Length: 146
Image (tube, rainbow, N blue to C red; front, side, top):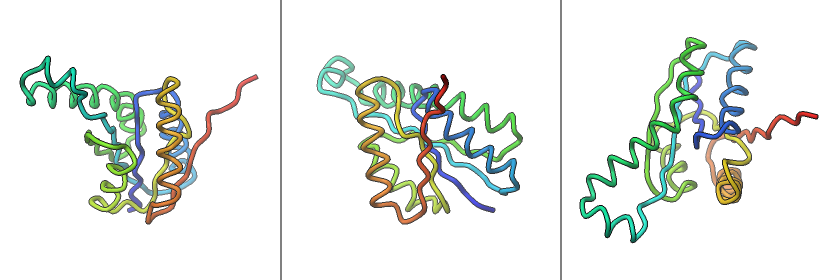
């Protein structure tokens, strides 16, 4: 069965990638899905204030699971097999490591994330994956509404 990695940042735009994948399934693609959320590492302030690295990991994991929830729900509602992971680090590097570790046959991601900083970040992530991924990458652009 075809395995597809879909990076999800919790934005509505990231759900467009999930909807695109479901469109492919609707056209007969037999697939299972690996959803991934990449959390940014804690900054110095967070490390100093938290005093406990386990607390930071738990908060990061919870934030990642929350960001994945809508995408997981969408795929499960369509009776699709889905695995969800939360990792921490540089988004492009972490996604490339997930590709290596989980061996999906393709990646589908949105062109932009949530917010101005996220837009730049996910734009750079899609560029990095397009240039470095060993598997095909589909970049889904937002649906234009007039």
